[in-house]
Amino acid sequence: MGCTNREIRLSSSVPEIDKTREAKIITAFFGLDNALPQIARALYSKAPGKDGMPIVFSLEVNPSTLNATDFEVTTKDGTAFEVEAVTLLPALEEFELRTVLLIGEYGNHPDNPPVSVKIVEDLMSRTGTNFKGLSAEIIQLEEGPVLSYAEYFSLTEDYPYVEKGAGCDCPKEATKTVVKAVWSGGVRATNGDELGDNELDAFKVTMVIGADTMVVKPYKLADLKDNDNNIDLCLKETGVPLIVAVKENTAIDPRNDKNPKTKIEVVSRW
Image (cartoon, rainbow, N blue to C red):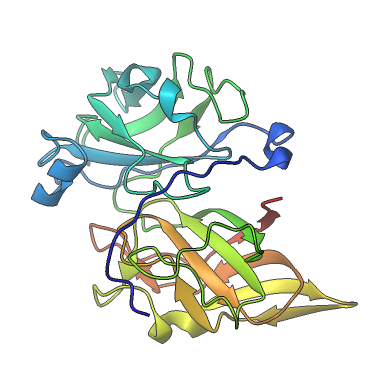
């Protein structure tokens, strides 16, 4: 069925393995400079014309602890900026609560761009880890989107499967393994459309299948049409994915910057 309706559902469980994973900021991306569009009013009423900066964490964020005052952004000349608004939208589906969008004013490209972001107050993961004190360098405006995080899982009987609507899952019967690829910010195909069948050859997954290590490609992409930075790669193979790689010039960010060749280690969700 087609993906036509948005249904947002928070996950009711948290992977146990997250209790032992390192808490860190994986990427901070200066995505838009004074250029958030009118549609961003759905995220924050004063968002249009502001800066947009998605931050990707290694662990899911506890939404009840998320506040704009948790973040401080420093520009090239050393000016520290407070954050005006934060939101987990649009990446607000099961197991996606690791991307926080910062909205506000954080200097200007190219004279005085933001160079670092720091967590200055208590911001907790869903497993109880405090992100306070963490910092990261910021990927600059003119750079294209990169892979920030990837995890694999299977569509088990207890998986909160979404059959249709924006953000819907891989086809249940044909899919043996799913790799969720999280980008540094929202992405589309280079022609401005959703990523889809035309981009399948650009995605490569190195995985262990039995005694062999093979490189496979997805037969379909899922978790689309929801304007977030999560893309699911649907695989027909059963195994353990190790690395996901994407060919350069496959995707663009909201500024139309193309991605460089990018790859990242795939971890297990469970």
